[in-house]
Amino acid sequence: MSIRKKRVAILGSTGSIGQRALNIISNYPEKFDLRLISCNSSEKIFAQQIREFSPDRAVINSQGAYANLNGQRNEKTKIDCGERALCDIISDMDLDIVLVAIVGFAALRPTIAAIKSKKNIALASKETLVVAGDYITQLCAQMGVTIIPVDSEHSAIFQCLQGEKKKDINKLILTASGGPFRGKKTTDLGLVSINDALSHPNWKMGNKITIDSATLMNKGFEIIEAKWLFDLPKEKIKIVVHRESIIHSLVEFCDSSVIAQLGLPNMNVPILYALSFPNRFNADFEKLDLTKIKQLNFEEADTNTFKHLYYAYRAIELGGNMGCVINAANEIAVNAFLTKKIQFLDMQKVIEKSMESITFVAEPTIEELLEVDTETRRLASSLI
Image (cartoon, rainbow, N blue to C red):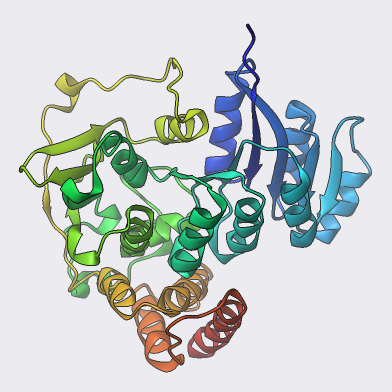
């Protein structure tokens, strides 16, 4: 008896997560049926993906790239352009799982379209829950949709909690590598270069998420994401710096037992697990050899130096539209740093001023969040 292939969409297919997911899917032709891919503007990579994988549909945001791609389309793949087209296709297409790997706020509307049409989500875009966690989780409950986290830390917790009861959870412990500036103090960070900030010791990621790792905003977003994914207060979510990035996260239970998920510092296992859930597929990924690791180290996170962590906890405490504010301000700040318009520590000032200045909304609608995002970006840009 043949088992139907799982029908998959990959949103953000030209990014690091999307490309890794496509590579994994190519190794399981009997398991997965790639139906849809999308990207923002990486025309050359996207064209190669269309040629190699021949999905039914492909959507690119850039009008110029769309015009070029349309002139070289293949017989199978229909190419479209823009967010509205992407949302419509997601809603109408028969899909079992939508991998959301779009960076930033741009992931929100396609994710909502997928949930409203009752497609399960493999979520790699943490900003979606940072911006609209309350709305997204309520919508998932209403539509009977499951979110399977792709972030290595949240995937680890998700795996550790299989078969466990929420009432028995004492604490979630997210691990952080500490990024390239682990152990540094504020006085050390004033004039760090872009190359310094992009030199992550353990992980190979895109520029934006690598800068977020250097500021620890990436970990701050993960705190907010964990709150919504696992429905726990911030007091039960702890960050521990673990420089080897071998233990991806841990769960402490009421009986003092601690369960951890371990693996090499790459995204192979979290992506495959999210795509294959609730099953596990055989894989020939490189295996973890603890005798080569020899030791695992842990230390407290420094929220005085890395204030982005404080902003994240504060955003949870305030609730409402504050997650949207820190996400938008952070995107503007990171881009300004990467384009040499501000220094590393100036990113903190942009976020802090934005949180102080934007009008607080306790229970924002999606329309209000879109307005807050625009308003915050305008304010943050004026601070650059």
